[in-house]
Amino acid sequence: MNDAMSALDGHLSGLAAALLPYRRTAERLAGWGTQLAWTLATGGRLLAAGNGGSAAEAQHLTAELVGKLRDDREPYSAIALHAETSSLTAIGNDYGYDEIFARQVRAHGRENDVLLLMSTSGTSANLLRAVEAAREVGVRCWAFTGPAPNPLAEVCDDVLAVPSPDSQVVQELHLVSLHLLCEYVDEALPLVRQLPRTAAPRQRSVEFTGRLPGGADAPALAAAGSGPGINRHALNGHAANGHGANGHGPNGHGSSRRGCPS
Image 1 (cartoon, one colour):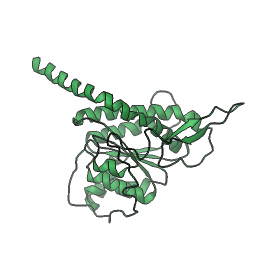
Image 2 (cartoon, rainbow, N blue to C red):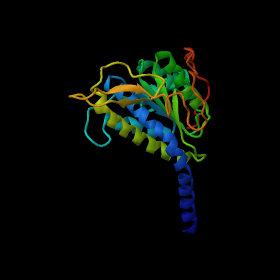
Image 3 (cartoon, one colour):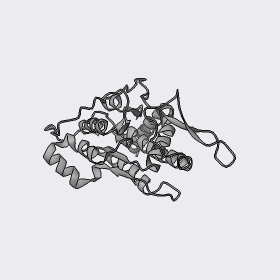
Image 4 (cartoon, rainbow, N blue to C red):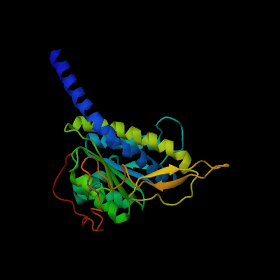
């Protein structure tokens, strides 16, 4: 019993230690929610992927968007790439495991769609290849990772990096993050539906300003000039600066490597 309590206390202590710095990092989710609401409401799509436990969480996210979080609303297009098992195994067999997500991004991604990648390590080769593919087709790239800096954080447009060395704690806070992201999407949708149908701003976080129509000011999107937003990686302060945006993708042949970190 003492060993069981020791394991419990140890795990909860690690989670508690990560909560305060995570709270600061998670502030960027409000801006993500506004951008994602705009993308989905204007006919765009969310693509999501991960490995292992991160794959399960990415699939959880897409289920919340196609289904609902709390209140009933229209369904939105969200695809968990790792759940496309026939495509996944065919691509892995023909092109290599590192290409399993990249080829699907080229197939399903359209300009201004969002690709959200989840990884505790931030080093998974198949996720890094997916970012390269996203650059080719104009898809925005976000990531949930463990501590930054890491390779995935450096090449994505924005990242939520959970500041914990424990991958279990990282995944638990990724789950909190995806629920919060869906909350912010639902909050933003009523305003988004009233705005002209143009592409969502890229590379900067956005927020709604003004008042509702009907005798009041119309809502508008205002670029956030400071605070957590696109190109400001959590904790390390490094900007993405368009890394990986050179338009050069993989040659369609994956390496012989089978499997990669979560």
